Length: 304
Length: 306
Image 1 (cartoon, helix red, strand yellow):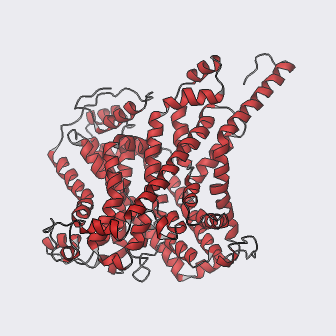
Image 2 (cartoon, one colour):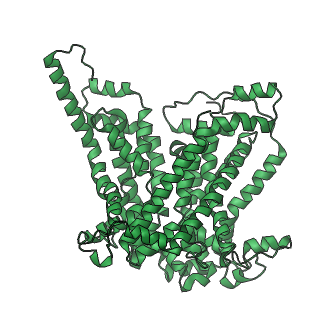
């Protein structure tokens, strides 16, 4: 793959994908003849970029302002008397440390579950021949279209009957598998050559051995993408934790933020901005570092 | 599992082997399948069944001790002006939001694909950043931006425009939420479109250029037709996402003012909160059918072969 500065955005994306996947199936990037960059494109894109990142900048600056300062009209852009009061209040009075921990616990288990279960069923769907394979795949794909709200009433009844309301298992179990994860692992495993499986079989490895020692080590890029997408999905998940977490000690960050933002704290702009920073900035940092995997995951699955 | 010599013993051996293979494969699928049946397929079916019953909170411990009421919940739904209003709001959100998001994302993707070499990663990261962030947190920030004395009106003030109290206005609340959703979803489609633009054969563009076609003609006659599958895919997933419109009104307006931003998903959630479980299930199935219908329409409009 070329790494000259001349290649296009698309071949850039292709290179990201190719370097992330050990076995690239894409054709080698052909040099495209492009018109020279036009200055006005940069201007328009930069204006758009400012519009895109402005809410984040505003959030970050706002989190260091006092409520009085935010309420001033016209508002200051930069905090005049920067303060970290909002953060001390957040972690002191509102206990965001607990919500942060809850979010981490739920996201870690959800991510682990998705890696294990999606890889297993993905292997079966990609590399094994068996009766019922088509039915299983159609079932998985079909579920992708069903909106979350359709399942949540029976899911709540089920969770209540299992006595799992307001518990970690109640928050984790329904998300241990996602159709998207299965789809992603299957697609990736399809691209692995059958020869290596044949070779493993000739060497006398059983299916489990082949799966664990031959296939999984090659799935690094897919597992990375899946990890990022599920961790992120879980971190940002709102509707289900909102329903299941009924006491403050089980709130996840988005739930806490949403519920506090409509209560008596709602008028405390700075405090709410700081809360938003605590929810957003960790994933934003992860994203900036690992952005090529995000882009690849989106391109591979098309679903956020 | 083709047997070269179709003799009886060989066939028996082959079928034994395929039975074994099937067993092993289902072994791999089993943990997923159990969770899938309990937490996905089961609830999907149960929800449909519930929507024909009168299940409420009091039946929670004995969910099967309820009455079958046929289509009563559905009839009641469509007789409720608030539900109809929520459907209309959702429809406006989809009809305005989806094309707007697609058009802007396509413009950004085209710009990034046309001769922007420097800072490409910066642009990509910037435009994609809203996608990865919690919608709840973002909604809170936007709520402050859209305050009567907020950032947006401050900006408009530079041009001598006195902006409304966006979220307090029955006229502007829904457009405000659409604006925010468009902002949030551009990144996803931009990446999909960038991948799709890769599939447009450059030979066609070169031939058209030789024939003297200008950029707009090439865009309309070459890029768009070649991108059709990508556009369809983008329209379907964006449509599905926008129909489930929930977090924005939940955090920013609670469906108000005067139900101006009440969405179907929000209505469903409220009914669930009141303990009207079967009624909420029926509402969720109406939403599901709307999603299926929208997807079919999109397939019809965009999926036809040239």
